[in-house]
Length: 315
Image (cartoon, rainbow, N blue to C red; front, side, top):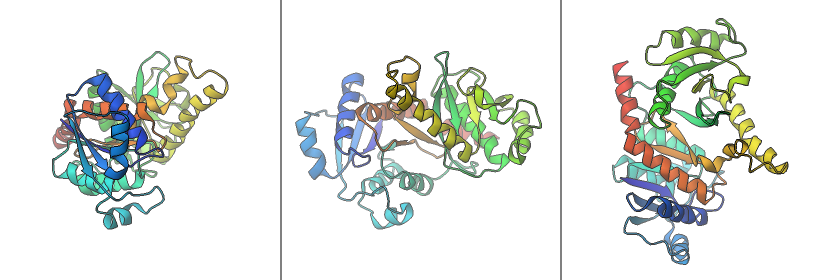
């Protein structure tokens, strides 16, 4: 199992990436080959400082970095020696099985779409996030920003992708699927919601339980919550603020509220592409990087991308 990590991605790169790899190795052993992709002049001194040593570590020199404010497509084309470009080249050529970065989100999405490509039959890949439930379980919300405008058929595909992710990564048997709406009754909502409902209702690949409302996000009503990326991103950003509010009010150690801290989940998986791609938060710390590697490992071992491909081939 080979996992590539962009050492230059993130506000605190490459320091937190180095610390994250060390944390992962200390907690998980040396069963995974990790390919550290980045500027060796910056990475190696930190590797020595933190005594990061393992036969499973491999270093790939990438002298260029794509900044946060660079145009994704243009930067990937012009910076072929950047850590993100090299990472996707390694992933596309089969030298690594998954790629992680907390760098330029747009470049990661463009790389995933054009280097790895979407699974045959998937109209639009999606990005998903974990939603902590009050009873200790977790749910999946998608899309959370990749597709601001969607057609009903696309939301129907998101439901399938989310269900497979919930089952094989989160371990939820027969996950329930809810359509985010402004009311529970069939026929409620805008044109998109009204047109999507019958597609989900007739989809025998999912367990559709109907519409869910904003008050249902954190209860156990639905395991997979489906919406367009515009709505999902607003919900995601609101949910992310819960931890900041809790911290300001000295409640950061609350068992439930602590679960809203981004570091607990590491990164956001791109679902619907042929190989595992995980995008981290720009402010990712060592724990976040460690959890991103762990998620990549789980996605590889579960063969989730192939399971998605088989599902869409059968549909």
